[in-house]
Length: 229
Image (cartoon, rainbow, N blue to C red; front, side, top):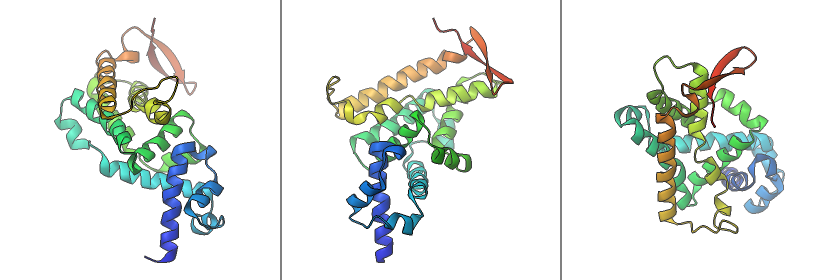
């Protein structure tokens, strides 16, 4: 491997770590290059700047998460809809045990879920996110035929974010005031609990139930949100 390729890969590896820890806005190019023991100008030379580096990390994340996914279109159709939810949740939380590249990619997306950056918005405008495609396909198995597009979208976003708080705050769960013991047993139980609650919500059609109110989207298109007492 050429030195330029080694340098580029080192920047990507350490950028993934820093973006996972701090999000795009909190990540410093100085910290990335410090960890990679590379000159500060290397990011501009190899990627053209922090935003372009981040886009490349996002692209690698999408590819890696697709390869590591427990689900595909065939599996979602083949298993029961409840099992599809379990696999969907499980593929997000189980990598946290390994502290590997996949878990860092999930954490990057968790940052973006809470506070999307302009770079991320531009990225998803041109790239398909498998997690959203999977969530929508699962959601459609629970919703009635003819469900409004807005209903499907709301339910898809809701399902996609069931594990997000735990992924985003994973490092703090074991610290005061929570002081949870984070081990395989905890992660297994977390996956089971989140799956059970997600299945219950989808079976009841949660926010998309019959006792719904009408809200406006984009000023014109309406969709229903249920009255939750």
